[in-house]
Length: 172
Figure 1 (cartoon, rainbow, N blue to C red):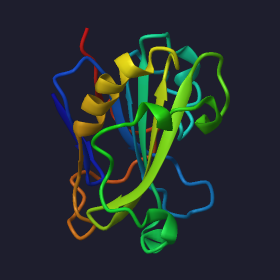
Figure 2: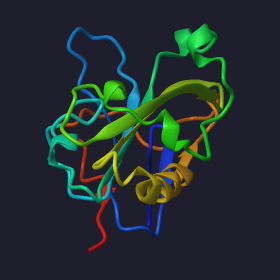
Figure 3: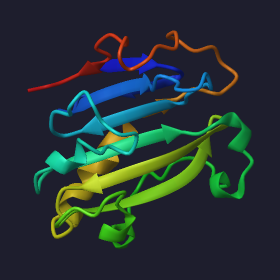
């Protein structure tokens, strides 16, 4: 299955709930694309870093968020790494890396640029104790992400989360 919008795509045969969207602007500023992938169904109302979804993770679940930042930040030191990580280190996971600490969960964040675009990759595992077993699932989810160069036109118009048609897929 493939979904795409805003120069981002997800290509996965894995059973995931996947969404690509932009938040509705509050003050007229341009908002950046966000991708959410989760091994369990996500609620429609979620925070950029998955609040609302990560609260529901069971011990065998994984959440991956790819959050794009403004093109003006591409050259910032934070985004100096080129390309997302393809393999994850179990030692990178900690409850302290979570946006909000959740019992037994752990997460990690990676800041990088890809295709000339700045991103944060945020991974949450439903169980820190199961991290070695869950990391391959997270790596498959990360491998399913596609990023087009910032120079290429967007394949879908910018729409708010409220008006975005169901741009997701779920496999039972």
